[in-house]
Length: 451
Ligand SMILES: Cc1cc2nc3c(=O)[nH]c(=O)nc-3n(C[C@H](O)[C@H](O)[C@H](O)COP(=O)(O)OP(=O)(O)OC[C@H]3O[C@@H](n4cnc5c(N)ncnc54)[C@H](O)[C@@H]3O)c2cc1C
Image (tube, rainbow, N blue to C red; front, top):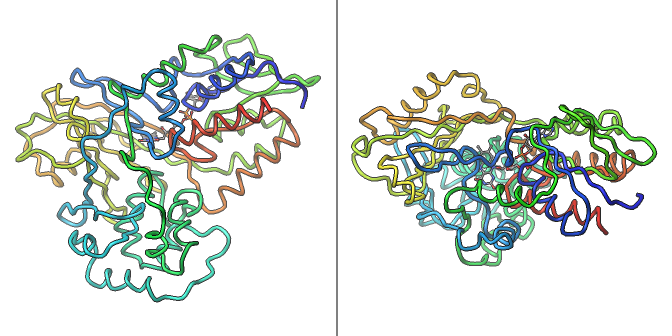
């Protein structure tokens, strides 16, 4: 690859903005091309009842360094806030049951809390215990979450514990998701020992402190800070295609002018990137188009405190897919983030929609608010209707890392390296969809272009 001086970053979400920062720090000229009117992509803080509420993510993983370090570098270290509680519940049948303490992404690692929670039937507990004696089985090169956990601990552990967590985080299905791509901690436990439980117990205790952190005032502060440091940020600029001539890449932009660069970092979702690279690398476009995405809607509903018989004691609840409900999870926002209580209302943020379930995204706003409220009223005993609401739709918002995903990503990278050196992909569609993983991918892309 010829010397890189000018880089075009396509997409001004967290991956694109972080990549722009790292590339700028390495002394390169960077232009960020973002279709939206503002920066941030999926990170969008809005306002409801006078307080900031997150339309997209509300926290990032704090047990890995990338997001926390970036916040500190940007002078936001003192603004990091931990949720007031980590307690969560599962809505199973007609009641809420506590998510048992001591688990790894839903795989229980201690018997007593599991029994106490009542999440599994006695037969389900018996089946889970077989993990300790069953022989090891060969489940192929890239087994799904359900294949590994189900084989060792039975279907109930998959349906009632692991699918709500791993499936919930990914808006996907444990039956389809790649274990190594979506739950590497479980994969490591499975590799460590014949018994999954014993393998997970052998894992070194992680660093202390909160697992997740948010930012006081909202996560938009992170992307706003990053965006304010980008010297050439072109908002409202949609890139449609990339062509190449004499070692220079030309990005077709609407509105123009087109942008020229020595290298390109594509941080848009893979189905968008597929169209962009169709001319310079049909093979990469083919791989990119294979990654499917699920649609999700978040609905924050505001209630008068009198709607609740008693305060909610936890950060929220997860709803197993087998329950067939519209909502997949609900963050009890005012309990999780006490600062939001300044609204004087109780804020509940429900998520709906996952891979294979497009009911929510297909509903109109009124239908959605009504459907979400009816389920929340049933789960939490709400006696009144919401007084306000905020809906955010995320069509094709969640990439599905199904079995074979990492091979697909390797195929994309190899095709681009061969056909279009200097064109890289990074972001949620590829090597981790969480904010921290996106920042790590941004750093990796910057390193590849500067070393
Ligand atoms: C509802 C929801 C809740 C989530 N919760 C969490 C959470 O709690 N914790 C967590 O860590 N992660 C969470 N995530 C995941 C995380 O927010 C995203 O994976 C991450 O923010 C994606 O960042 P990105 O930069 O890769 O992509 P995006 O944020 O999607 O950014 C891509 C950008 O590209 C732009 N773009 C698209 N097409 C074009 C084009 N043709 N030309 C120019 N620009 C274009 C888009 O406008 C967008 O700004 C959540 C996601 C959602 C939707």
